[in-house]
Amino acid sequence: MQPLYKEAVRLSKLLRFYVEDLLNTGISDGYNMEIEIAPDAENAVLECDARLISRAVNNLVQNSIKHNPQGCEICISLAVSKNQLILAVTDNGTGLSAEKLQELEEKPHYMESTDERLDLRHGLGLLIVGQVAATHNGDFKLSNAFPQGCEATLIFPYILDKQANFADL
Image (cartoon, rainbow, N blue to C red):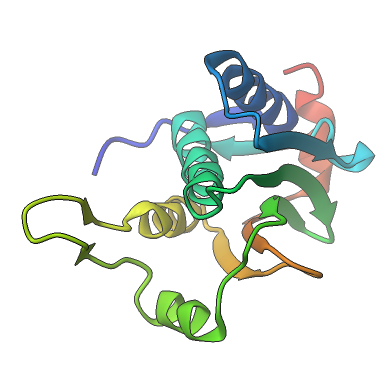
């Protein structure tokens, strides 16, 4: 494990920077990136390690890309609900079978090889996302999106009145 560097981070800014960087470094034309920030989440600040939150978001976006080689729409959203800050990465790709969802709930990482000599797929991305959420006293959920696709959600505890103190970050 690496040291945790928590600071007050305005998540809307972090997410916009991530999407901008992804688009600037190049993404296949088959993928459409979208970002949705709810008005009440625009100035939401989370005491977190920005590098780890960015890594978790990147792992989720890269999973959408990897598991939908035909292309798809990917949306990163941020919302506030009750005492929670909800960060979601949703795609309209193929989604997950019921068996795969259950398997990922029971064991969020896997090792499989399509060839004995190469192409070992470790599948640790979702495990890392879950660990990042837990490190920030949050939760990670994976589900199928309606009408099709996959939704990965990071849920963090959030105190609404802290928002006003950090509005300019």
